[in-house]
Structures are given as C-alpha cells and as structure tokens.
Image 1 (cartoon, rainbow, N blue to C red):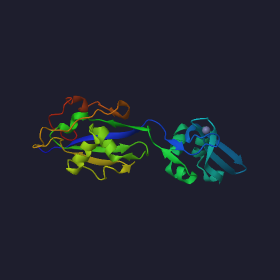
Image 2: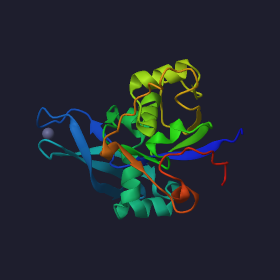
Image 3: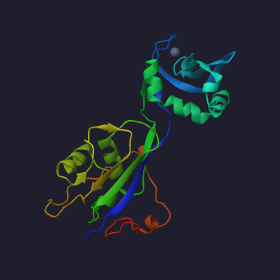
Image 4: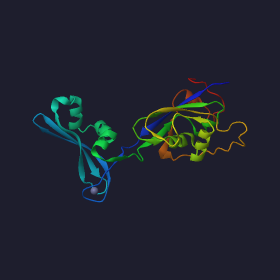
Length: 233
Ligand SMILES: [Zn+2]
C-alpha cells in the first residue's frame, strides 16, 4: 500500500513582536505598540505615527508611518483605520519589516507564535509517509528545525539525523529561517533495520504547540496511527 497521509500545521500568532530600539529616557531597549496612532493634519497634508511604549519606563515614542503625505494619496479606509486606532492596522505596522528597516529598529519575534498541528506526536510512527503543509499566520522568521522539533516532538539531533537520512524531505536547510509556507514529507521514523527504533519523542512545551483535532476524519483516527489513512479520507 502506498498511500500518503496529509497534515496541516500552522504557525499561529500569539503576540506582536517587540520593537528593539534605545529609549531616550532610560536604558531600556524594548518597546510595545501602545495600540494607538497619532494623526496630524496640516491643510491637505497628513503625518501619521505609530505610538510605542518603552517596556521599562512606559515612555511614549513615535514611529513615522506617513510624513507630509497628501490626503488624497491615502485610501479613505486606511485613514479611518489610523484615526480609529484600528487594532489590525496597529498589528500590521508593528510586524512590518519594511517599517522597521526604514526607521532603523529591530523586531524581536520571541514568544510571538505557537505551532498548531492536526497530527498527534506519534503520527510519524505510522507506516506510510506523512506530507505536512506548513503555513504562517504572521511573518515571524522561524528556524525550520524548530518547527520540525515542535511538530514531530523530536530532539534537534533526531530531526537532523532524519533529514540527513532522507527520512524528512524538505525544500529548505534545517538551520534556515523562514516566514513563508512550505511542505515537508516525513517517512516513518523507525525504518526496518533501525535497531529498535531509537527515535525518542520529546513533549514540547504546551505554550509552543497545540494539537488541533479537527472535526471529521481526524477525530476518527485512533490515538496511535497504525493504519494508513488515504489522503482526503
Ligand atoms: Zn524607557
């Protein structure tokens, strides 16, 4: 039987990144969005700033988003979003790599995401290959092997060994960072001849991984996947 099982993993957002830049009032360097914009109109010209607060002293600082732009050059919906402190717009700009580059600060993505999977940790012990489509909800740069460790419940050493053995096939180097979706294929972790199946499952921290047992086919799966589940079943 040569069926392929399919799974979906998603890198979900759990927080906004921290803006790293010097504070003018204290020695702190970490800032969080205040959730607000400041909009100044001067005739037909607009200035828009994203407001940040220093995590240590709470000092407010301003990141220029638009400087002296003509009112007519902004989409009305965008202007409304600035004027109403739209949380989605705050989030979009707080995660913007181009805004960070333009204003000379760094984004720290630590603690901003968690991996949601629809596969139990022991799924890799099933006899058929598992194809996993990994998607990103936010542009957090994540090391590929970190995702594999969380999703498969394996140590870094085990992940690297399986990649070297060709049992995990992927389009990126394990040590690379990405924020774009990609697909991997995992063969069973204990091929015949692998003495005793030495791959050790490591339970990832709960806050970093959630297993989504979706309604439907996946709910019908036994906890230990011993039989092949055809794609789309
Ligand atoms: Zn400060």
